[in-house]
Length: 170
Image (cartoon, rainbow, N blue to C red):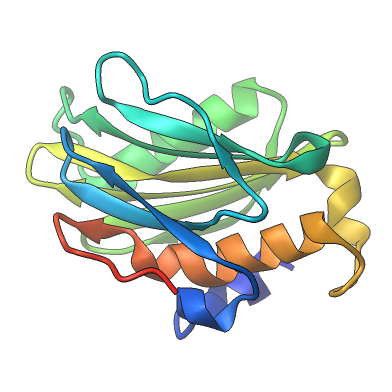
């Protein structure tokens, strides 16, 4: 399901999802993100400026943040490390894509589904991580706010995180 939403998301824009959108700018790491403000509520930005969490109903959480690339790993090696970290948390990786300057992973366990995407930007990574209860995966479109959140985030946020670019949120 996530792979299908990911593929659909490549052509989506925030305006394609229902509801108002808000804009978060991470000054420290130089990226912007749009998020569905009717479904996600921003938490305070981290004291060190790394990023911000957005929470929704029923345990849905989106985190947008940056990290320094202190290891200097190639993208593929960074993706393998991240997949290993998810495995140690009890997740099974169900989707992985690695490109020249980004990678994406999806993983699940009996309780939770996680989807993340990271972009390599100079000597840093920026990106987002979406976590939501596994029970939400069984919902059909139109069955509630959490399903709309999943569709909106996976079909829209993927295309609006930018490297130091100005984003117009729909």
